[in-house]
Length: 165
Image 1 (cartoon, one colour):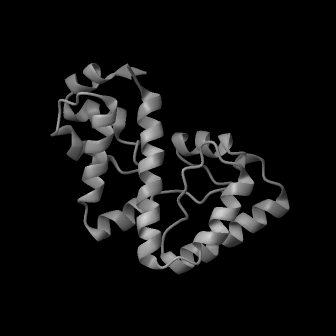
Image 2 (cartoon, rainbow, N blue to C red):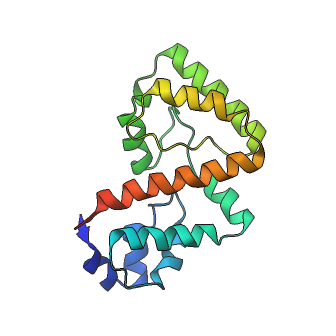
Image 3 (cartoon, helix red, strand yellow):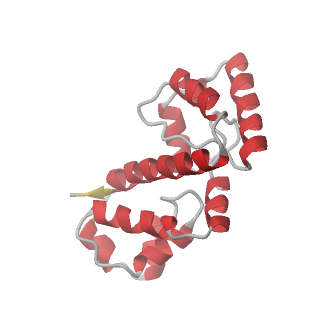
């Protein structure tokens, strides 16, 4: 844990080292946000980082989406994602549940070209499954908007966990 004042004092390289994985495998977001220092609060830091994403090109957004792991995967994932999925019980799926998640993940990626993204904190595997089944019927525009909203929720949790005060 660190304070917002300590974050504000970091050079770009250290800033990216601390915050580069807040947005899944996308350190370019932290690098761009560094230029907006100083931040008055952790919420202001998150808003600056979210604005970098909102102003990103469509190609950058798709790459950000694709950097996220499938939910319920048995493959190794980034530490933040592993902790979040574990908290939702996705690391304890039965064989049958794993098959259902795998099939929905496959269909979702086939339809949208990126993994299903959901802020899983505080959600059960049943809630996640229901969301997957519902959102697979979204239009590309609806799902892009929803994925961005979910990423903002995920990253806000991460920043609030990382920075004190």
